Image 1 (cartoon, one colour):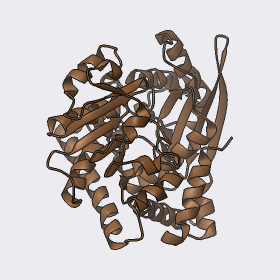
Image 2 (cartoon, helix red, strand yellow):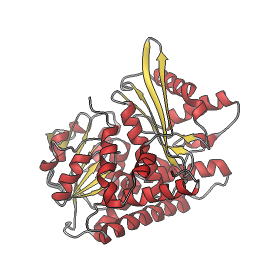
Image 3 (spheres, helix red, strand yellow):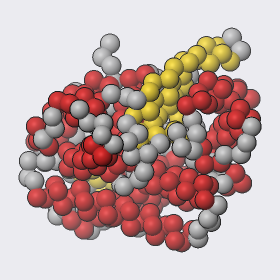
Length: 408
């Protein structure tokens, strides 16, 4: 079976010549600094678990923990690599980190989830910490889980250290801005996209794959701003209405515990949603949703990667030839880690900042990152947006590596 990380190595090999990387630089970028593995024993269940740290020359590792039945070591390595690039691109003092536990949390009791959370910290706490590796929520994890993990970590080390994890409940030092920060960053990027790209209608049509935290929140923001949301989907399937969906009603239904597929409108599959002829396709689910197998069928004018790695390496080339613009994940979904940085810095210093100041700072950092990437994209007509973003991120990492005297 093909390793998910093969896509990372393939993509970097492909862009190596375009951005002028040496063999030694590629090797330095692709080698994780630390891969930690464990088996969590929860009752009679044995759950594989991982924590990966990638290139910490800019600072401690930073990245989420996901609970999902399809988690693998290759996936966690890929996510940690992308986090290293994302943190570098937006100017944060972090390397890349990611973690995961392979199990299906749906239908599990709160007690079971708590035991998994505490067992995860027990397994990896020596590799975590505010100056070592800082976790955060990811797929099927949330602030409550982060709070439990913080509690277990502090029990293990015998002292308070709130900055060791972000995305926490407000009572434990979390930030209200964190709850919708990934979506807010994506929304900022979409608005910038509209300012710079021609051929988008006055009321852009949008399809959103993934109706979890990020997808739901960006749907709400776009709908309030006058965008026409024609389709949304979750893991059960989706709904489509060419005239537009009342997103607020769909959100109310989702929050009541019902799937988005039960809302009024034509029922469609996730695969059908991806192929709709919309101005903007927002990918807010999981990785590898658009591949060589379906890229030719994509009709969206623009794609926003709110999830990590939803367009694979082979699909990128096909979409580029079709002149479909893909705003890469390391730019589009970086709002979450930017606000995690605010939380981390506030927890470390004890300096409490006003929410309005932090929201403005998020906007400024997202806007600046967009302009860095877009200006390089305009100057180099042989680069797509992803390669432009990779070029900027990699350059900063390599300069830091060189400054430490670590480049061979």
